[in-house]
Length: 86
Image (tube, rainbow, N blue to C red; front, top):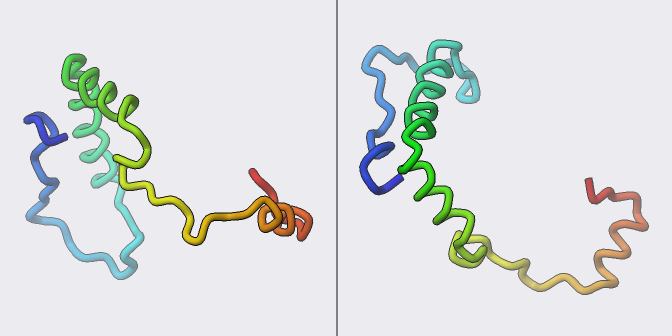
C-alpha cells in the first residue's frame, strides 16, 4: 500500500517476544484486523490497489516460473505416484 493509507508499519512498543515465533496473541490479531479493515473501508484506496493487483501480470508480481520448466511427463509421473492437485 505504497500510496498513503496503509503505509504505517505495525508497531507496538509493549509487544513482547514470544517463546515460539509463530505465536500470535488475540490482541495482536485484533489490532492487525483493525488496520486491514481501515484500508478496505477506504473504498477509493481499496479499489485502486485491488484494480492494480488484479490487472498486473503474474510475472510483474514476482512469481517466478518453475526452473527447470516442468514437462508433461514429469507432472504425469508425480500424479501417478499418488500426488493430488488439490
